[in-house]
Every structure is written in structure tokens, then in C-alpha cells.
Image 1 (spheres, rainbow, N blue to C red):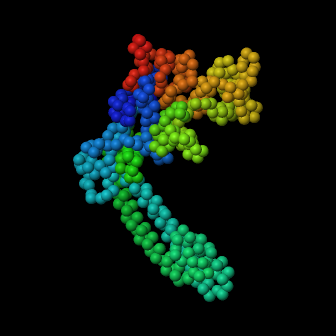
Image 2 (cartoon, one colour):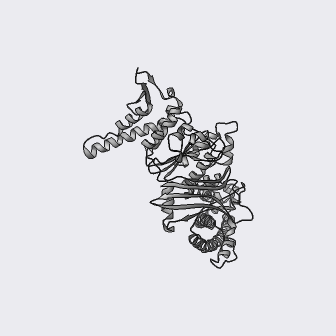
Image 3 (spheres, one colour):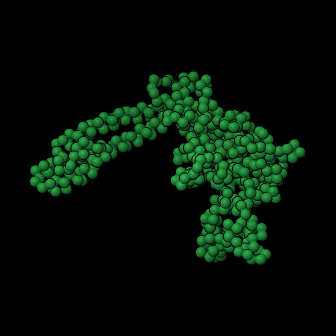
Length: 491
């Protein structure tokens, strides 16, 4: 999969963006240049979140965060967020991300004459969300009814405790029952156990039981209505080749009145779910951790510009985001734990080869050789128990530790390990400000590095570096206003 074209009409700083990434270009590496403030980071983050998170319920919070402020004009039903063309198996699949008012479905159905519209309050794109909430309420209520009915049976079996003369016996018998009923907060439970009347407790339990059964019947009816409406909504979405993504709030209100949909062209709708899932696993974003990430919550982003404390600092929020976003990587420093895991993985591959073929493989040796080439004048040493790494200068054997390496060396190592350890191949890799901490020669060299490390990937590199751009043909270089390249550099 490769991105062939991206269009963003109007999102934050991005205005009238229309960029083509030719799939036939070799290498498939495209510098994305502009001067500061051109929106490069915003564009990469928007592409990543839309493609990585749109169909994963656990990640949709990041879609909602990045859409904060993306409002719909009151004079229109919809607004285009982005159009992304994906080159996939010799055809172009177009993803058009659209924002609607959630209540606009009724008008759309009427205007398109798709079906006869009933007068109900649930005819919205988010009906699946409402149905999920009702089903959850039914499950909770059924459990509560079960607990209360069990309590009534228990009450019948212990009625004779009112004849007990011993307070200790009375307390013993009632304690288990009280624990079962504790969450319902009956007035009787507030009394000392010795003073509880079984008859009064029975009345309270029965009253609560009747209320729950009435609620349950109402929820059943509501579920039936929602299921009927959902079929009509799905039918409309199917006919329009639309995929529901999520509801969100553009202005921070609790009511999520906007809805994000995706119109998908040139693919069978029965194949959309598999396609989108595969695409989500083939899109990656790498960036410096000092970047402002729009997919974090508004409150989290503000922390970067405030005095930090130990519990709610910006970087703890960023760490939490990284744990949820499997395709997200920050490459400021070498992650030694990932490096160690890479060595363990190489060792295990060699051992597997020995079992299958009778001879050890060369994955471990190849990893050592590759890392030494990257380090140029240093040799990497791995502890015998695979617990840590050190380095030696190849000319005099001086021992060094990770903290002795330059920022650029650590970063180059981390990028290599990230790509190799995670086996990132045939993927779309978005990289922001990759040239930071690199000598101009390395800014030029990183293009050859990426092409060597994993040539099947498509790389889109947001950059300010002339040297990096000059490592490719001028046609590879894409620009946002205000443009990066000087006229003489283009020539």
C-alpha cells in the first residue's frame, strides 16, 4: 500500500493542500518541505490518525482529539476533512473523510428519497453508539434483577431469624445477605444489623425489583426500536459507500454533535473492513517527542507549556499515547530495551534455524554487522546475558557507553532498530523532522539508509533540510506554502 494523493481543503493551518506521491517513483521516498509554520507536522499527524485509528474502537479517542475545533458551517450539512488516495494492488482506493451534523441523517434520507422517514429521535448516524449503550444498560439491569431475586429467596429462608434470641446469631445470618444488597443502598441497610426487620427489607427489595423490571422492559423496547433504525442507517451508509467512524465534539461540549464518516470508492463494501484494518497496520508515524501532538487531548497538549509535576506532566501523557498507538514512535534517543529485544529476536531466529536445518543461522551476526556499519568508527558489544550494551572505538579500543554517543548516532541507531525490530515492510512510514541532530552529510545519507534498511516502504519525510532534499530528484520533493526550496536548489 502507498499513498498516491492527499487533499486537505481546510484543516487548522492547512489550506487547499493537494499533493501527489507518485507510486512509480524509485526510491519511494518523498521529502515534504516548507518553512516553519507550513503545517508539515499537522499533515503527517492527520494522515496517521485517520488511517491508523478510524476503525479501532480503542483508538478513536485520538480521532476525536485531533478533530477538536473542526466545525461545520450552519449553512451546510457536511464538511470535507481530507481525501486520501491509496494505491493498492494496481488500483486506487479513495478515502474521503467527511464531517456531518449527527442530526442531518433525517434530512439526507428525505432529500435522497431513500426511505420513508418516521418521526423518531434516534435517526442519527450515531445510532450504533446509542444501541451499544442500551445493550449495556440491559446487561447491568438483568444482573441487578438477578441479585435482587436471589436476595428475596434468601429472605424467605431466613425469616425465622426474627425469633433468634442471640444477637450474634442474627448478625451472622444477615451478614451475607447485606453484602449482596450493599450496592443497592437500601435505607434498611443503614440500620445496625441487629435492628433490621425482615418484613421491611422484603418490601424495599420488592419495590426496587419492580422498578428494575419496568426499566428493563423499557430498555427492551428501546433496543428493538434502535435495531430497526440501525438497519435503515446501515442501508443508507451502504448505498452511499459510507463508513461510520465516530462522533466528536468540535467545541469541547459533552454532547458529541458532529460525526465523522468516510466515503470509500473503488472497493467492494464487503471488503472495506479487511482493507481498513490492513491499512491501519501499515501506517507508521515517527517524530521527536518535543513535537506538539494534536491527537493528544487539549488538556494534555497544554501541559507542554506549563510547569510540570510528577503525576500529570506532558511526557507521561505522551507515554500513555504511545502505549495505545502501535504505529507511533519517538526517536529522540536510543531505546536500549528495543535494542536488547532485537538481539534476543536474532538469537532466537538462529536457534530455530539450528533446530530445523542443523546449522545456526546468521541473523545475530548480520545484526552486529549492520549496527557496526551504522556506527562507522565504533563497535557494538552486547553483554553475555543480553542485559545491556556498550561500544568501543575501533582504532584504540576505548570503551564507551550509550550516553557517550552523540545524539545523531543514537537517533540513527534507534531508527534502524525501530524499522528492523518491528519488521516494518510494505508500509507507509511518515517521519517528522528526521534530520534533527544529523550532520549535513548524514542528512543526505539518511535517504540511502532508509532505502537500504527497508526499500519496500513508502517514506514521507517532513523536513527543513536542503541536503536531504538534494539526495533525491526535484520531482520527489513535495512542498507546502511557504515553500522550502530556493529557486537555485530546484534547478
